[in-house]
Each structure stands twice: as structure tokens, then as C-alpha cells.
Image 1 (cartoon, rainbow, N blue to C red):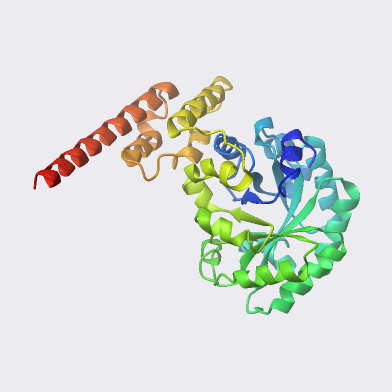
Image 2 (cartoon, rainbow, N blue to C red):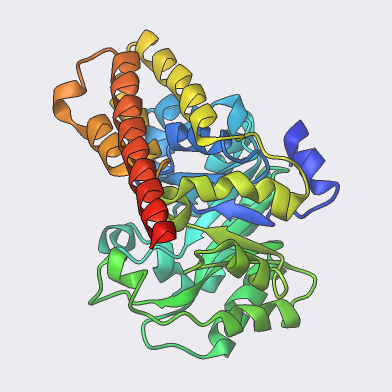
Amino acid sequence: MKNEVSQQISETFSPWRLSVAPMLDWTDKHCRTFHRLLTRRTLLYTEMVTTGALLHGDKPRHLDFNEVEHPVALQLGGSEPADLAACAKLAEQWGYDEVNLNCGCPSERVQRGAFGACLMAEPGLVADGVKAMRDAVSLPVTVKHRIGIDKIESYEFVRDFVGQIADAGCEVFIVHARNAWLQGLSPKENREVPPLRYELVHQLKREFPQLTIVLNGGIKSDDEIAEQLQHVDGVMVGRQAYHEPWQMAGWDQRFFGQAGPAQSREQVEADWLQYLEQQVASGRPWTQAMRHALGLWNGQAGSRRWRQIWSDHQYKAMDVRAVAQLASQSRSGIAAQVEAHEARHQAEAHLS
């Protein structure tokens, strides 16, 4: 990885030690910028972008990112080696730190495009794509995949897939520890119904110690992250990070040994408000970015009311700072009521 932040990380830890998964419709540049207010060290990924969209569509819309997002990786969806190579060159030209090939998405729409999880049935094609990208750029080329497809549940299947792609030059594999069912399940069900089989990912690391193996799927707590790091090189967290973003505020200290940027939720909220104001000044609605921060106060008194105000359509035309003040006052008022109630309860318990 070429940028300064990435170099600082790699001096001590693998760049893939901890990452937030690419998530369609979620991990756009606003989401990634918000996450950078919580963690400097965690590797961030774009939403999956198809090779066709990059080669024939609006490149700035798909490729623009904020410098604070580093280290940041571009995830590609595609299967044609020449197209993948051309898109990898774009990733390098635009300053990304990594290019990742999606071999794990099971949606029917993705399958119709002949990429995603269905590529696990064509390891030779994946190997050709990886080689083409590696020949085209100096960036790390990585692959994200499942442990199997449909009823193919043997370790040998994923072992042979990884082995063949590794022979093409891939050194980093991000493994979602579930099978992908290509028919009969929605993408959401594919994240929940097929059982997690972490032991197969651990076995990959034992059999391929020279490779970087990153585990993905079902990880929720920091203790679970720490446990998996005893077996693999890295952990990728998905929806847990999106819905409970404050959890990331402790990651830099715990997993990289350095203080993170977030000192308090209040500070993060204030910094995020500045970003929202920048969006408004650039002619963009603040709502596009704010939706990614709605989980900031989750678990705290008043969080529901805070979230409701930010999500309420009647406030979307208001000045963003006025909405922020209203949301903060509502949350603080409810929190004060809860504290007063708890204090009275404790006093009554003491008297009894």
C-alpha cells in the first residue's frame, strides 16, 4: 500500500488486520468518511462497482473519494480479464490502496452479470482475472469469496479454489465463512441461513501459511475479533460496524496499539456536522451523508429520538445545524430524565 497512513500501519501490523466489508448501497464515500472519524487504522472498502460501470459510466461518481479515507480499497465486480485489468489501472490512477475482486456476492442480478459467487465454479477464469490485474498494476490484488457454493460443502473445494488463485499471484484472500446458495435464498438470507464454518477458514490459514487469510461473517464483538485473530491474519466486519459504529472508536487502541481519533460521541457528532455543512455548501443534500451516521448514539438514552429527528422528512429542508441542535437537545433531555429517574430509584432503594 502506497499512501503514508498505509505504510505506517504495515510497519507493525498487516494492513488487513481489521477491515469494514464492502456493502452495496452503504459503504459509499460518505459512509467511509464517517468511519474515519472513529478509526484511522481500519481498512475500508468501497461498494462493489462493476467493470462495465467504470469503463462505460460516470467514473468520478464511482471513483471519487476523500483523502481521509485512506487506506481504502476498490471492490470490482466482473469476470473478463481485460476489463478487470483496465479497471485495476483506474483504481491505481485514482489513488486506491488495493483492488479487490468480488467472488462472494450471491444475488441473481450479480449472477446474470457472470460475476460474484458464481465465479467460484470457474477458478480458472478468476485466476486469469487476477493475473491480468497483477500484470497491470503494482497495487495489491485481493479476492473476497465464500467457502463454497450451493451444496458443495467440502473443505477441498475452497482449498483448491484458493490454491489455484494463489498460483496466479493472489496473496490475500478474504473468506466469508458461509456457503453461497445461488438459488432459493435472497442476498439477506445468504448472510444468515447458511451456517458459519470458521474452522474451514482456520484450516486454510494452516494449509497456506504464506498467504494472508482474512475471516468475514457473523463477527459482532471485539472479543470475537480478538479470538479470530488467534487463527487468521485479519477480520472483516460488516453490518455490525455499520449499525453500531461507536464500536469502531476502540479499534485503533485495542487492535493497533494507537489512540483513535474519537474521544467522545459528542466530538464525533460535531466533526460530522462540519462535514454535512460542507456537503450543503457544495450543493448536495445533507441527508445523503447523514443516513450513515444514524447509529452513532445506539444504546444510549435518547438515541431513538435523536435518530427520529435526523430521519424525519419534515426537517430535511431545514438548515442542518438547526436540525443538529434539535436532535441533540432532544437526546440530552431524555438522557437527563433517565438519569434523574435512576437517581430517584437508587435513593429509594437506599432508604428501604
